[in-house]
Length: 287
Image (tube, rainbow, N blue to C red; front, side, top):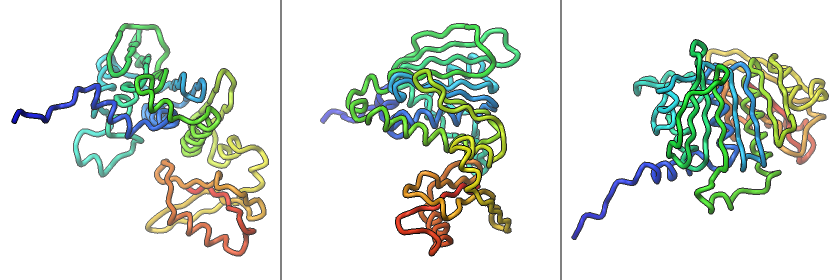
């Protein structure tokens, strides 16, 4: 019997890996925003068209990349964030696996522009379905711009699975909120179809919460703080009388990263027991 096991071509392997990393436009937004933060960006702009189905672009003023790094960044398991297995126990960056850009480029058209501070010219890369179409020098500001166009253009079944624009935009805004709330010292802005949805100035945690959820939120917040040998907690909870019927304003952050935890959520809810009316949920922003 002849041999039947074979290695998958890179572009097929990348498409399969993309299924793990890129589930919808919001997944791309999360990965690109986190890359911009890891690059040291202090001003990060998110541009969306058609709820991310046509365009997702993130522009930062971070350190930028060299020509070689720009090309390598789209290779699987290529990362600047860890070098040895021991580094996994001391990770201070958002990402470390080196799969995000390769996975995104496998299922979209990507245009990258990047420049380091001391370079006169930057690098422009155009990639379609993991295939590099062009690489050339370009005039661009310091930092990096990644534009992801026509998401899932080569996987019609995945593209058809996407929800309506309003639903996909809601998921994108959720990711944007989570990242922006965790980094109040970074100026974030967000545009959809040419309209500015957010322009968040640098501030503290309370100011960032108010800038996202509205001025009326300020009077609803009660500061909380606890410092033990095990954990340090800072943040805010909403006054019981302002409890909502949805869980949209419940946020836990660990080391500046948003997490979901039913255990911690239950712990917070138990504190509010007897204070909330039936069917309502307290707001909290805990760091």
